Amino acid sequence: MKKETKGFTKAEFSWMLYDLTTNGYATIILAAIFPIYLSSVMGHNTLGLQLKGYGSAFVMLISAISCPILGVIGDSKGMKKKLWVSFVIAGALLTMSLAFTNTWEFLLAGYILSNIAYNSATLFYDSFITDIATKDRMHRVSTWGFAVGYFGGGTILLIITVILMAVMKGDPTIPVKASFILCGLWWLGFSLPMLLNAHQVHYNTKPMSEVLSSLGSQLLGTMKNIYADKALFTYVVAYFFYIDGVGTVINMATSYGTTLGLGTTSMILALLCTQLVAVPFSILFGRLATKRSAINMILFAIGVYIVICIIGFYMGYSVESSGTGMEHGLAISHATILFWTMAVLVGTVQGGIQALSRSHFGRIIPQEKSNEYFGFFNIFNRFASIIGPFLIAIITGITGQASFGILSIIILFIIGAILLMVSPKSQI
Image (tube, rainbow, N blue to C red; front, side):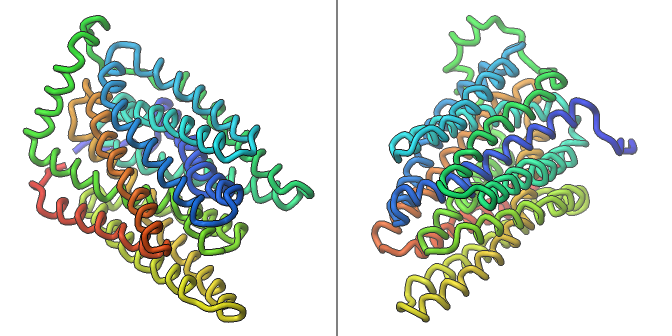
């Protein structure tokens, strides 16, 4: 057996650095700062949570429709990097534009458009793993990428934002808007190494005119190939469900906490804790995957997420069912402790489950069609991410209690776990 190279190639390291940008956007826009800001603009009621839920569902629907088409085009020679760069620039500029509006309509529009660009750029970034790493190195490179992203992207951006909040007086929106601009600049800056050092190795040589004319038949053929491979198909369907739960926890956490009345600073610091915990655990997941298999590690992470959802329900329900005055204050204090507990638990599995899902898929698909297959992978991802936010929005609206919305996410994890356990055994 060939001994694994300990270091990383320039292409691998440059690819890993881009995770600084994906994690930075996910932290500032999807998880920590923007959801709190949008909720404050809406008046700290359930409407902010519902709007973000509907907005996220719309983003995922558009991304699900566009990703397979972009994937086919991106598999053509020289197209992968061009498309990736286009979405990087558009996404970064749209993110910075959030700093120049105070109305919820424009904030929501900017969030939706920047998120679509973010998802499209991520499609090409993920598929580049087949170009920059060999199959035997993919788990290691993918998990280290998430670790780098958590440590550098999310942590540094959160630290900068917390410092800005501490030193800037007067208008409390100034540090928030500054974080949006910093997020966009961060995105552009850490895209440069990958732009210079990562290159498309696997591609098809068909003329673009032929690719476009046969787009429908090619997409249909890939769908048939995925369905014919029972292990691959079952894995992707399982991913459809469990990654929805993961994405919902990431995207809706601070909106949920704000709805319950938890302190903004405490929630941001708790998410900073998540970033720090995720660094070593992402690397640990990569090492254990080589000994216990990626699927077993993903199942373990799903179990932890089920526990997180139960804690989240109890946290919310205790606040919603509390009285007023001192009783409510005690419930908020208790909920804050539980939010921190959830933040630590999320940190232990969040990076690992995402990284191993990506690298496992990259190892079992044809490398010359990586964009196309990752496009379909993202269909399951994006359509799945409609369910969680939509469930929370609908159930919160019906019951008037966000805690029941959080509880409903458990079913997604359970379905995903069952499918993984009954799927044909993979040798990878």
